[in-house]
Image 1: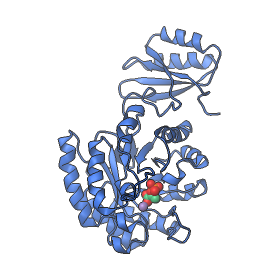
Image 2 (image 1 turned 120 degrees about the vertical axis):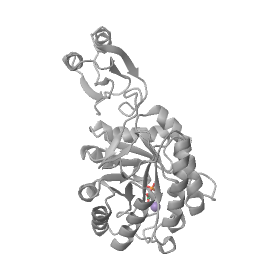
Image 3 (image 1 turned 90 degrees about the horizontal axis):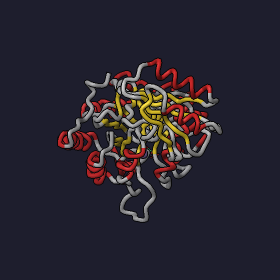
Image 4 (image 1 turned 45 degrees about the horizontal axis):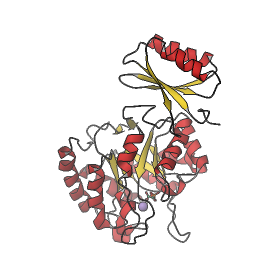
Length: 355
Ligand code: PEP
Ligand code: MN
């Protein structure tokens, strides 16, 4: 059983800047009632999640409401708890090796679909950094629809990514397809991607939670928004709060695009969760010419960032060639994203801000 006993649970919202002793006293009271606590310390206020079940919960609720320093006690009716806005009203800022997601800026990750060689990944890293990306992507373990397609360079690919990070200075996100690959991926990367096909791989989600390593969690092609949030809950339930969600398109019925990029999920997610949400217009559309418009639309919809596939020579790419931008196309897109972000009162996160 998870840390929340199931069904309804509650959170205690402390008054702004409530002193530590008052927070401690509330935690003690909850623990004395035989329940657990989950602390979320924001800039302004602390929120305490009440964990578990007890027949004295209602009594405890009343007692907590009368405890000094407590502003209110709110039941969480959603099936997801730790990821919910009720648990943490302000946006979570997820930091990954100096790159920030969710702080209001537009954070851009770019790189090839797959790592194909050291030269390819270093050249791409250099180009995307020059154009304004703050994180490098590239798959070493590739979840391919066909077993006959290129499956990735595996550990060699991870080594190339680490070398590109060293030479170019961008943190790296790359996919782990199952729990057995996790340790290896964490050794080389800064952030683990849990891909669309593995969004409901519960062993992987749990292990990624235990690894306490930043996670980019992509929405499954047939997953509802609630299923995505519950997948994130698995990770957070293990005490790992560094989770970034990614909308990458769901299965539609039209063939002009590869998937149906559900941009309405962005405002819905921003309402339901405090976690950052980014958009992947590359997997989402499957076609180079639609990546730019949907990247712009993603930012306009309120996404905290973008993840975009860029390849030095997309025609020769070993995976997802038709959807990868050339470095020049990526540069042109970034030149559009910048003024668009400003018009929306935001800014593109620059490498200068990433340490
Ligand atoms: C990818 O990022 O290359 C990828 C395979 O993504 P997804 O899991 O969203 O299909
Ligand atoms: Mn891809």
